[in-house]
Image 1: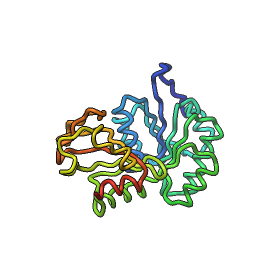
Image 2 (image 1 turned 90 degrees about the vertical axis):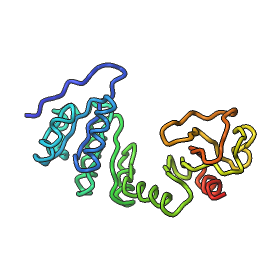
Image 3 (image 1 turned 90 degrees about the horizontal axis):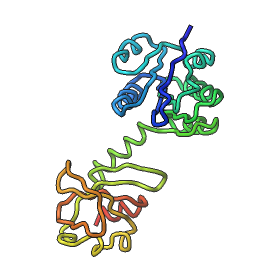
Image 4 (image 1 turned 180 degrees about the vertical axis):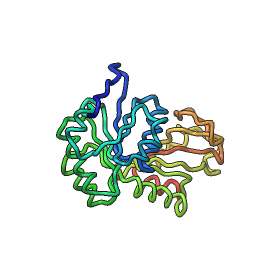
Length: 226
């Protein structure tokens, strides 16, 4: 019989169950542990469970579509659950549905396609993620665009990394007026990849500085092209 796990009761604790320990789920689970979270990894594959036994707070071999097993593990008491299954869309959807039914506060799920994602949204999943699609877009902007890096925050709103042109050299952000002229804001600047500082009106820009900018996608694209 599965044993219900006792969670840290601290109001600052974040307890997460990651269901599916493939490449995406395994990497996510390890990163959560590095962030200080209590992580339960759950997979039906014995080899994967053994692989992550030394990395995660708890690892259990179980069928994620077995509601009784999930309840016995106390999954309903976790702050969040991530369904990282994409090899079987049916298993992903059924697992996510059970998590919603047993009352997990925040359910995240990986979608393998737009259709998969629509179904997950329709059953009430709080956050649907498209890691393959999102990474493809990010790499495309680095390869074929004018940004050094690119992250879509929400529909139509992005963060991008670019370099300051010679036209900006020796001027402050207040003088440059990026919000007024381009409809974007500069969040942080750096003269190297490892020394970012939060940007403010008095931040002085030099040619070649790295800029982290945020704004509507079309405005960011226009700004980075100039």
